[in-house]
Length: 272
Ligand SMILES: NC(=O)c1ccc[n+]([C@@H]2O[C@H](COP(=O)([O-])OP(=O)(O)OC[C@H]3O[C@@H](n4cnc5c(N)ncnc54)[C@H](OP(=O)(O)O)[C@@H]3O)[C@@H](O)[C@H]2O)c1
Image (cartoon, rainbow, N blue to C red; front, top):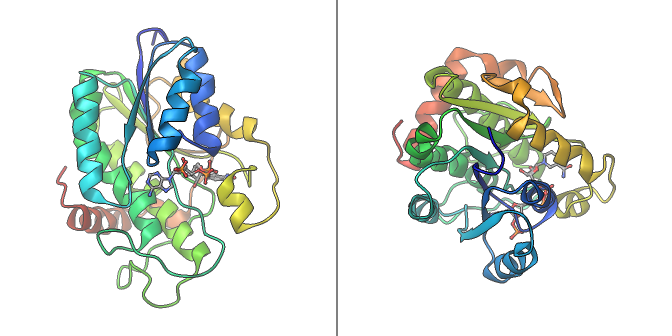
């Protein structure tokens, strides 16, 4: 893919890993559609990126609200007739406390933002990705993965921030494996990754208070999945930083994939 012609949509571009990935991609040129939820931060981002090599558009949506996810897809479709890469980076961490939170739709917040929003956004943007073929979907997931209790997906019982975060990232990876099976690898690829461990971003500072890897490790890992030509046609994989790795054992379970898919379609109202 020629970097000067490509169109990339990146969610969660206003802070942390997303902002750093946006900086790297903007230096390559092409067109970047940068998503954020906060208008002031988006405005600042577009000013800061105005001098880069890339053509920049910004789009706003709170991903904890499925109506805004739908609107976001419409806005993107007004901006471009195709997408080369869709990077699902926006996410909510485990939080500073173990207080359970709900989305605008009444769903457990981390499941909603980290899994249901990307699930719905991908479905709505598939036509643009298919026109952009060969195109890529990159799921910024995590090594923290915990299987879903299908009898209590919104964690009304036994809630902890870590469990909520872990099940949301498990869902993202598991749905990624399932989606890769229904899309042709030479049309749209779908891969997920653990970008790096406890990088110095807001969610890590509030959730842990200490850091391990630097931000650049995560940026390089995401950019690898976005543009490494050696990964052309690679799909349905999970990467730990830049290495192919094993996700949670249950993420490969066909019955788990089926139940998660059914639940995700039911909760989002989208149908693949
Ligand atoms: N940091 C790590 O070590 C680490 C490790 C593994 C995986 N990850 C993953 O990396 C991704 C980026 O996280 P980060 O570390 O850069 O944390 P961060 O600095 O807290 O960034 C999170 C991003 O998600 C956006 N976001 C959160 N809730 C949103 C909502 N309801 N609607 C729309 N956007 C929302 C934030 O927007 P605002 O800018 O408006 O706040 C921000 O851009 C996440 O998916 C995270 O799970 C990070």
